[in-house]
Length: 507
Ligand SMILES: Cc1cc2nc3c(=O)[nH]c(=O)nc-3n(C[C@H](O)[C@H](O)[C@H](O)COP(=O)(O)OP(=O)(O)OC[C@H]3O[C@@H](n4cnc5c(N)ncnc54)[C@H](O)[C@@H]3O)c2cc1C
Image 1 (cartoon, rainbow, N blue to C red):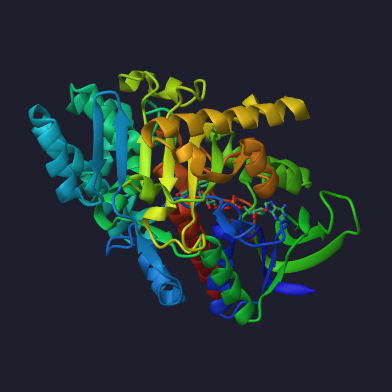
Image 2 (image 1 turned 180 degrees about the horizontal axis):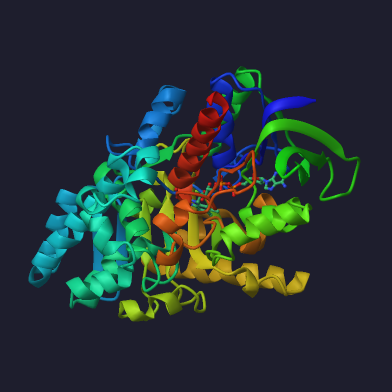
């Protein structure tokens, strides 16, 4: 069977690319190894509870957010309910307990009231991060590529020019003396990376600037609603989605991608089938494309030479919680609470506290009872703990050790939460732990990352633009590709990939 486009993987990048291409009249086949669409953007059922795998908040949706145009084009906002979360986050460490609002004017007010001596730096911080976000999105993406090589570039993007290689850590050290303030501004670092001293200021600014401009949103009913909706666009436009099938090989002929080999069972087991397409889109992790999916040695070498061996981002530990009584009824007032209460005092220690023992590690508690989440029946609710985590701490354990470590992780974080919300422990009716191994199993992402390549200066901005396929008719749409990870990054990468294919097809 022959198609215009074959998409490997139904994560947000693959679904968005498939949706746009089918809407534009392309005949799309999407092959997904799991039984449902979404990758990290999924939910699962436990009795009467719907458990959200990944989504805490999706950022922006303001006029400067490029995905707003995509959502409008796809009818996403007419078909799904986006619930604005009440604040950006609450930050807790010894001596500090403050709520950071989800708009920059109020955030400036709250921060200057708490740290009056740092007012000048606070104003500069917001000026620069908002300007960086604006500069990146004010020019359409295709023009960017042209502009990047032009002498006029500094006039279009002065902040980008200055800060392209700056890390968040360097930026905060240059602006502030107060370590509590630096940590308060870094509370959500775990949404992107583990170490402020190699986190790209540019990427941090695009994401944080988006939350501070448009706020954060949860999709009522969970992220699966968005994934299902995108899948329905593909199917409603005569596209085909095959679930429960693994692509084992990208077929290369005369140096160009021409199709895929896939089978029902895991790699190379079961009956192999071939499907052919003019274009192949890999939502599958880029290292896997370079590793097992390309068997043609010339193509493999060409891609490896082009992409190199970028650093892979860390993974995430999640503890999913079901409450008999919503934390809201026990006095909790925040949707996202970030705990830095393990003995961490300055940003130089932050990377270490994103890896230390869970009794001290930085973690976040998301309380979905603060909004109408659509995840639990009346009177009950759902919550999640998340922390940066590493597959190397899990992948060599025996089955018993693995289960023991999971149980310890859950109990440690539950006890830490109980100190903050006394009695919450007794209201938990369900908990389950998702490790980096779990993310790897469901997405096949190396190291169980959900963030693709690390968002560090040497792999972001202009360097990220270079992460493109040198192989004819092979394209990438995922957190691994341009622009990067998160719901926004994956959706943009899928849309941009579809635009590239449409442009090529129309030539
Ligand atoms: C716990 C957690 C919390 C998160 N919280 C947030 C948040 O609050 N806000 C936010 O913006 N982002 C969040 N993220 C990150 C965000 O979800 C991801 O960055 C994004 O969804 C990745 O999308 P992707 O397109 O790269 O695909 P992925 O989600 O990585 O999915 C890839 C898909 O491809 C399929 N696949 C791979 N190889 C093959 C193959 N060979 N054959 C067939 N199928 C294949 C996989 O099965 C999978 O379905 C979170 C992620 C996690 C895990």
